[in-house]
Image (cartoon, rainbow, N blue to C red; front, side, top):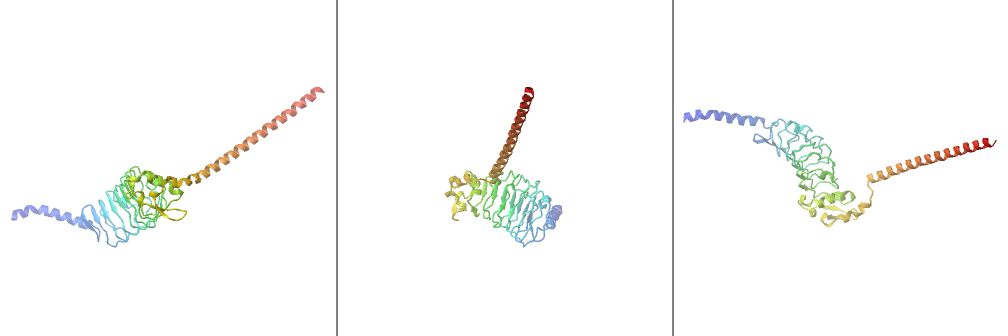
Length: 291
């Protein structure tokens, strides 16, 4: 028996030191069920905890009161692949929050107080596969190029926000996208929505609830109707409305025509004047010859 205990001592010492090391690296009020997971959910935190192990891979910070995260946060944790920040008090995201060199695969920012997603927020994180941005009731603006560079993104959740419109290029710039959630937003079916409607119609297989699960408000009478009741013909009057680009083209064309007309008039007047002078000179020479 004594021989067995002596034989097990090195292994017990190694196990004890490993557990002790993990316990020392685990932030206060958090749980670390394994060497690469830190669970700080539901601890009433008002900020990202200190002393998070640099080799963490799964970081759970949901159900707290965290109002912001440092823009260089993910630069420190290059092994992080799973980050859960849902149900906090985040109101904005600093540009560059998601580093270009990040290995993050899953990011949950749902159930927060985000108001907009500006350009440069996510950098060009090519490893990100799933992004949750739903249930942010004050989120009314998503920049058109905010997801540029997220070439691996497959699932995007934007449901139950405050979006009334969305530039269709937000979705067109995601080559790997196979699921997008847009239901529960106060969409406005005006001419700005027309291109997005065409994209949704052509990509119904990417919508978990289909067109039936997405409603929009008609601008004329304020009725809410499912997109499944509309068609491209519903937006036909929009084809007769000039956009800002159209107006600029018309103005520029008008300026060019005016300049061309002025130059032509000047050239014509100069030509006529030259002919008149030549005619006078010719008549003068004839008069001198007769004398």
